[in-house]
Each structure stands twice: as C-alpha cells, then as structure tokens.
Image (cartoon, rainbow, N blue to C red; front, side, top):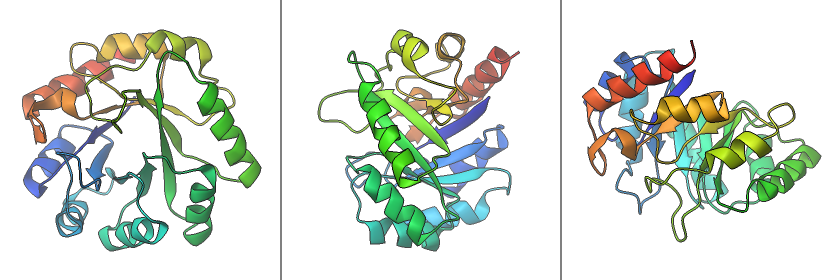
Length: 220
C-alpha cells in the first residue's frame, strides 16, 4: 500500500514523517491553504528527504510557468494538479518536462465518476499518461483538505481500475477509518492530511504512525 502524507511545512516534521515509513510527502503550494509552504522551505524539505520518499507538489490553478519553475527549483519528483485545470494543461506540462510525473486530483460526490471518465478520455486523446488519480471528497468551494470522505461505495462500483490510472484514495481518511476505506475501494494508495493533525497544518506524529500501521496492516 502506497502511503502519502500531505501538507508538511517544516524540515523536522517532514523527515520525522518520512522515518515512519511513508512513500511520499506532499508539499502544498496553494496559498489559501493552512498547509501551504514556501518554495524556500519546500526546497529544504526535499533536500532532507531520503531518496526512497517521493516529494509531490500540490498546485491549485497555478500558471504553467509557476508549476514548472517550482518543480525545478524545489526538486519535486511529481506534481499533483488539484484545481480546475483542463487536460490540455497537463499535456503542456508533459511537453515542457517529459520526466515530471503527474497526479490528477478529482473531487467526487454523489454524481459518481462520470466527470472523471470524461476527463481521462481526453487525457488519452492528448497522449497524457498519469501516474495516478487522487480521488477526494467533493465539497462546494473547497479544493481539498476538508476532512470529508469520498463516496467509497460509488468508487468501488464505478472506478475502472483496469483502464484508468492507479487509484489513490483521499478525503477524510484517518487512523480509525483507513483500513475500512482500503477494504471497500481497493486503491493503489492512500493520501492523508487533516486526518493526522492535532490542528490545521500541524502534524501529530503519533497519528501518522497509527495511520501507517493501519494502512500497512490492511493490505495483508
């Protein structure tokens, strides 16, 4: 089970989280988020991470140049596009930096995965190969980090794992529900932010440890 902890804001916490056995660290560049981080600090974090832990930058409606510059400056392994960007934006990213891995976040509600299917179909037409799809809860006016869970039953029924990129489940996950979420949706990986915090933007390492343990145990 691939595990990502998102919203790290300082080197000490990021390296401590990495030592707990996660596969990826998320760095949030969305200025309106309580988990946002500057390029300077993000660069320090990526430099301090062990090689086996991926650094993934989260972007919400940033310009193409901003995403590319930040990825290069901060030494990101992957970028996670989390806003209203069309498939053509991803194609431009790939054309500008073919080595950069891409995750696309989708906010899914009771309407199910219809919009996801349409978006991915356009990506295929444009030749865009995604490393994964991160599915978050759909909450009006929010781009993530709300603590609301995604519709697990709908995902289990509608997510086309055979044809679509690898499913990374997000949205309201925490140490108490991650095992049930994995059992229901059978994702490639899980992503957590608010579910391992003592307050917005402040990670609780004991909660991170519990989350990792529960996620690892669920794949047995």
